[in-house]
Image 1 (cartoon, rainbow, N blue to C red):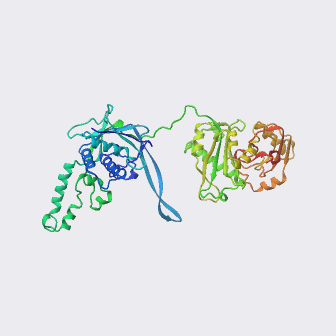
Image 2: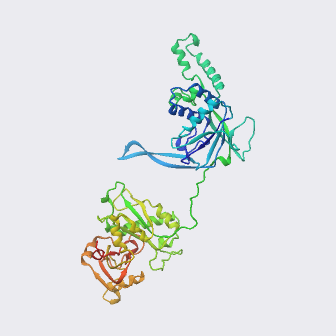
Image 3: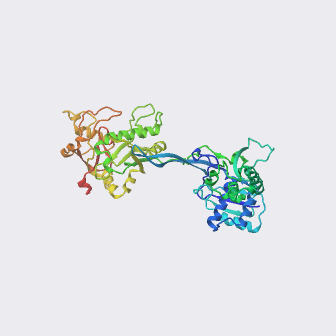
Length: 534
């Protein structure tokens, strides 16, 4: 009695049950007897060079069709993806798409066993083994399969078996399902003859034997001569004759154990017990068309950073109040943190040389926990002014600030100026974005620009600067920068952006950010170009 072992190298089995649409998200489990027989015949044509099914194969298929197989099903879960497939038409200048579900059973490395309770001779077994070895896939073409005929089968408990008439089953352990199967050859022959007898009485009142040969042939056409011929017919053929089911097929009831059915609940994500805290995430920004001129200019650093930060917090909260101090800068009571600027800085960067924002650096000295990292990974879009389509966002790096030095050379040169030379730092720094004072400046020494800058440096743990100089050329160039926040926080005490040059007695390491809205990209410094030798 043949027993077949099936393994799916891709870990997936794709097949839609008979009578259901692919978008219903259902999987035929187990594979129906009808599907198995048609798969074997198809392998014969594709691998054995058949022009028609040979007599040996007919005997094999008829023996397998005469009985209903037993199944030993492994534990599986169901999953799906959704694809918006183009349909080849345009609407308002956009290509129309339609939603398509792709549903499958997750088997992993598990094995399925199928047993036909019938006797095969040696020739039939050899042919069956040859067809199984060449099977390739079962169901959809994505369902790669490795099949083999096994001689000595292990002791298996069949958990999907045909229902027996008038035999009750325990509904607490079993469930009833419907599968498509072939009729036995003798049943099909009886059914075929009865159908032909019925049809023969409608040949314009003539007996079938007395009717012209063309009319006789028309009566026989919808009824293939044998069961194997039925299994060879495609869907277009039997639909052409108005059949709702293929000739030679039947619906059969199976009982399947509950523990062999699908686990519909989502599989929990595999998470380690301890998630490493990271201090930096770098995200790349691009337009759907790849047109860099549509990226926001560096002058919109502040609004882009604010918008990006709001999107990030929204991803984390999902409509609920967020308790994530490293992202919000507030404690659980909603009060600002008093930790010396340890929470997140959202810094738009123009790492190319066209002054277009193409990356955003998210940086926090306290680090990002698991929840914050998950929110960062989920970000896939942001927006900019005067653009109807969103900008695409992709995670480019996650780790420590030193990891940024591994970026390609076209980006690494500016990263080197942002962080300072590795393990050394720099003594001279110059504004990359305008420094906007966080306090008003007046004639009193304690309220001078230099005093405010020194105070900012101390609050961030930097040593005092030995020289603070206003660069008139940079200050003029910064006049087009947006300097006022739109969400949260008030306007700056002075709506003025300065270009500064700072010098320290000893080298310091970046990133260095000072002043109003420094958590959103303003007041950013990088290494003086002369000292960096870039």
